[in-house]
Length: 197
Image (tube, rainbow, N blue to C red; front, side, top):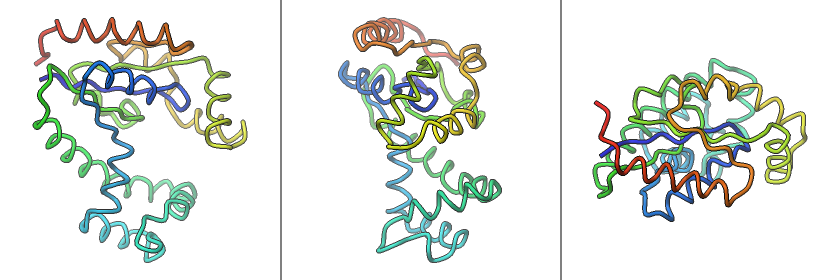
């Protein structure tokens, strides 16, 4: 079975593309969603996160995301330590999940493949892109945040030009019909292509 990485900057529409792969019957693993679940449900992870951030890390038994986001925003060293707890757990959970899937390939949707140097884990990488102004509009509407905040988040990620060089497939997500056709083309190619060793 091939493992395909699906990535894209904030507002590019990576989740929309993931849903299109799902509709074609492809098993899709949402790393962000699964990481949040693990941070709430895994006793080991909870203990490690409380060790790192203190008791305020959980509020009424649930991860206090606002508190943690504020803490890591102010201290990049804390972010690295949090990633060192979360990433190995998600990686192991993903491989356990992938083993149970019966499909020619699975997709792991994850935002920061290149930023975290994870590209070697995948047989192919699919990058979703969109013009910056469109991405800003999408995120300001979705997250009810200012344009400045979105630009700051975009600037924290690698630029698309750099990611395109390292990707096997690039989907320009501007209108849904064209995006769907691109996904179907990639799907056909992946089903035919041999696994990369």
